[in-house]
Length: 357
Image (cartoon, rainbow, N blue to C red):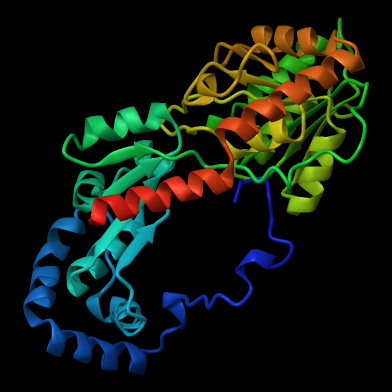
């Protein structure tokens, strides 16, 4: 889920799907399933205990007993393949369960699990039947980390039906931004850009959706610029509220940067959602964003450059409502052609099935 969102209700698409968390398994269940696992696969359990020492040098490792209920559920269910959606702790769990049961697994790596916390990353990638990531930028770096891994690009797609405009295009000067309040999102530069624009291109509103550790710093930055009536930090919102905000915005700003600690985004999903909502985008020429943004519906600027960001925002706001609406339609057409969630999901399934043949 995009960092600016908070859950509002269970996803209807998940109705009828049983969800089980490792934390729900009590000690008795863990012990019984660990005995079952050791009796069924003693040599594999010994190999897991041996390798835990190596894995633990880079990240916390669950005990075999804590992992045993998940392994037994997979065996009982007749599962043949496991997929981990992040290359963090879940990927190590999937790697271990797949070895214990003799099945295959795959992994999708995103951003922080590649650049900020690449823990046991090479082994996770190379042991996987297939590894994927959401843009060419991250795929290139994953292949450099693990040259022998089977790495492919699978875009984190958008549902064009769920993100479809229902209102006419606005004709104001409203900027939206969505993401966690952390350095890599570049929101400090957006606030500085709003200050630059204040004297020449007055903005109706800049709304930043999301929460995080930099909230106090960003609040202080807004105050120092005297932008309390223009720039709003509204916290995390429910998905429906974010969709409504996007529909009411004249443009989306996504000024990503590479953080001082190396953390970075890949290709933020909210950019694709905004384009699907026919909202033009101003973004940094950084990470995977240049792969998505085109002049027909957006602008790219150097990362961390508030002056350039302000200029690009002013450029888009200078178009009249009809011109911006045309840009929005072009953006939606592009994102539905290149980032459709159904097509990308099918591609992931095809890659997994091909790797397991």
